[in-house]
Length: 574
Image (cartoon, rainbow, N blue to C red; front, side, top):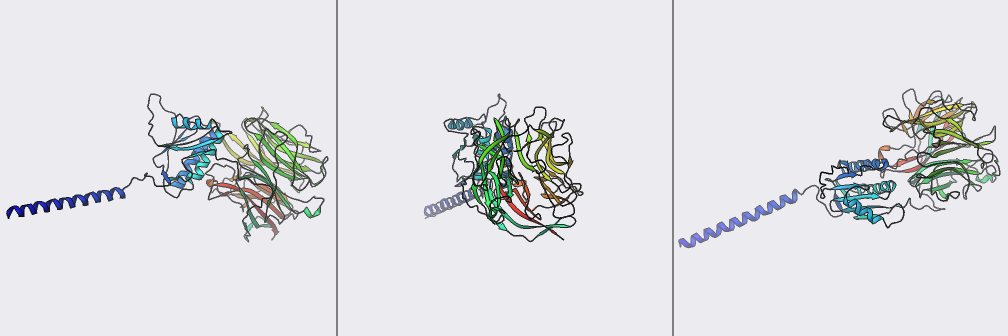
């Protein structure tokens, strides 16, 4: 009996021990599941919280900038502040092959070399994104394609993720050269728009006030818009139509498209009507920096109403042209007609044309930025023509003796006092060679052929301290006051609050006030380094001189990309 009781006690102890062991195991398992490491992956996502961004030590500056933008996007979208380093290392040290790294450009890592080898057989300036064990490789055959790869990764892996610390893997582990410059827009495409009629009136100084009559949103990824209202057409039914042009795609890139569009209802609806192409120099594919102009009188063999499109036909590695296309049928067909100026690539090019017709002498003027003169870092010049085909020698308009003082992006308007008002950005370099400033200046003259090139002009600044920088535009209208109204704007404002404004003068530019800008944008959303918010605004005066048509490049906050927006503004007497 005692043996039986002892056996029962022993068996009970065994059962209790087994039960306790099972419970402890279960608790530990639950604890492990509860305390999974934060970087553990889940289906469709990859944690990058322990990764480091490794960039080629000798990367091009635009790759360096794009890498920093990727870091910013990761922080804002995924909530992690990922460190950035270059691939330089002490040769006496051994690289950790198991380190988790996002490799940007053609780094010294084996994974970068392997990925680059896969591009050798591909055509064109291709790129690759490849995700392997502990490595994410992002690189292209050139700096430009590497930037495109970074932008693609940002857009499709980072910004589409809804998981903290994790990228969205729905695009797959390998993406090779998906880049096509833009969504193809063909002639006849009707553009999707957003129209919002606003009743808000913006107060401007003295006698005038301005109202936004409507805002139209045009295609994404567009830059350098320019618009005209037809007034001089032989077929009077065409007068009043709005014709606009913009460049779609990477600025000056090999696949950039020029798109001409038409509105027959005062800007409420638009459709693509033409795609001018480079034909004089077919080796160049990129067209940018568009400016549109309607001839008010006959010039050469071109009757009044001929549309002229001046643009920057450019291959940044080799050469650039200021080229002019013409259209005799309200923008539906185009012929590349003449070359105004020719320059080199990025550092010796010719840029940013603006056309102006002077009634008193019958000449068509083309103002532009000139990098080709070895005596100056950059200067503003004009050429003129009485037939649109043959152009004069260039004449200096703004040319500073100080090297690295870089005036750029000229726009001209004629005011009611007979003076010509020239607006431009004035950039420079600091001791480290980095660009700064870009503050908008202006200068005036009573003779459009005679400028004092060494005159630095006057900076636009209001009594309350608002001032503008970069990518200026201006226009004068007789409406709004005894001296009419002079409008100016730029890409950014400098007064501490980061807002974007239009500048207004009622005394021919002697004093300025700032008003709210109806087409606002936030440079902080430019996480893809598109770098084209606000490039470049366009004002024109309508046939009703109290109407100002205004186009600008603004942002799409949900993507960080840019689009063209159009607003019709109305000045009215109080």
